[in-house]
Amino acid sequence: MNPIKYLVVFFALIGLSLSPQANDDDLYQDLGGKAGIEAIVDGFVTEISFDQEIYPFFKDSDIGRLREKLVEQFCMLSHGPCEYSGDSMKDVHAGMHITSGQFNRTVELLQASMDKNDIPFAVQNRLIKLLAPMRPDIYHR
Image (cartoon, rainbow, N blue to C red; front, side):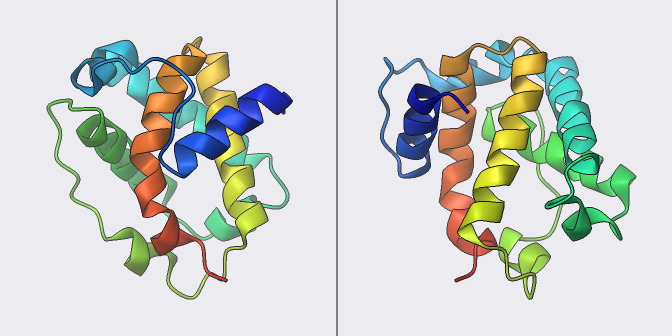
């Protein structure tokens, strides 16, 4: 990963930003609306399926449900017309013993999908910033 991009993602994960703040109410549209979010999630699921370190966490998952819940979650967080109906991140990730490195790798896979979908880096940063508060419920030391 590009070192500058890594630093900006790191700052986003801890709630800081190096880029000018856009209105998060526009994030849904900036991600391409529902179709854009679906494309990002489809790419993310594909990235996961080819990653030998991260795939084992998902190998027994119902991929259709995973996709549906990720679309709902990203749509809701970006102020789109969706409600997340899935389980809490704490419940979903209980007992998985995800390391910091594995968590960071998963963020990189999401970024790779957003890159392939031509989502500008500043927009990626805004979504990651909204996902960052979930980190303590996913990553276990």
